[in-house]
Image (cartoon, rainbow, N blue to C red; front, side):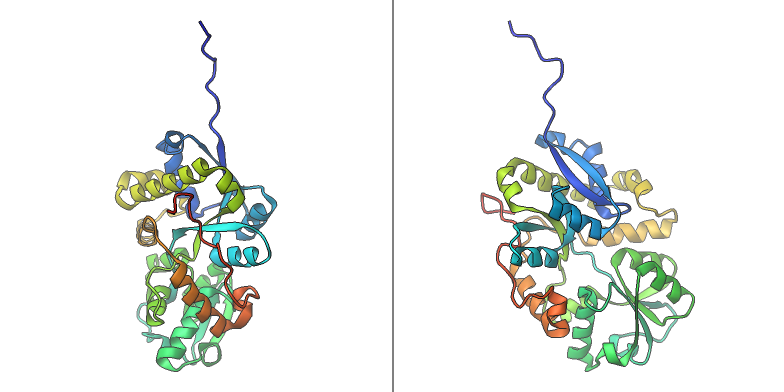
Length: 313
């Protein structure tokens, strides 16, 4: 009779690059605690990253199997000859934040105001806001407003101190401002709809090498399935949110609630297809910001979005 091995063979690992306080950490925590990876025959391994730039380096250098990045990075890399792919993760978007009792009620009201913009001149959210203002209010915000670019925490502080009249910021920083009593004037999603785009734009997603995914279909399929189940659990479970709260840097109840609401609103539905919307978005970004906004690309390369071997995903 054969002896039973002392230890079962270790499950293959999926190496994720995760930014501290990033929402991928929340999903990974649910996957681990609930054994969603083990149930699918893999073990999730999280590697800490300092910031998004470190995530790009980790992906290009092969230090991580999967990171969360935006689809434009994938487009630029594929155009340069890499074989990166993108699977939707979140459509959570930020918006224009202002004082709750202030006079700013629309994009048109930003004329002659001090506007802080997170992410820089080529940020996709800023370009969508500019395009919407031009199309519907005949206002060129880049010229009509006094625009200041900066990091989200700094811009939020300047808004609170009264040094700025409004701030265009990312969703998690918008949640923090809402928790402090500020109001969202217009969301980036509102601007997208005004431009004929769907309200959901999955600007960030899981990025991985296509050759790795094709060689490891059970790993990529298992991970995407586990992430989807973890998000479904977060969409409905108070218990899961209480468990991940230590990862959220949200001691105040109001902030905790706003982060939860915005995250759940951005969860990508299963099997979401982005191709047509992305082509339209690419055209708007290029028209508004030129090739600087598209990473130097004149056209989108093919193969950006992951399609599993069975044609799904």
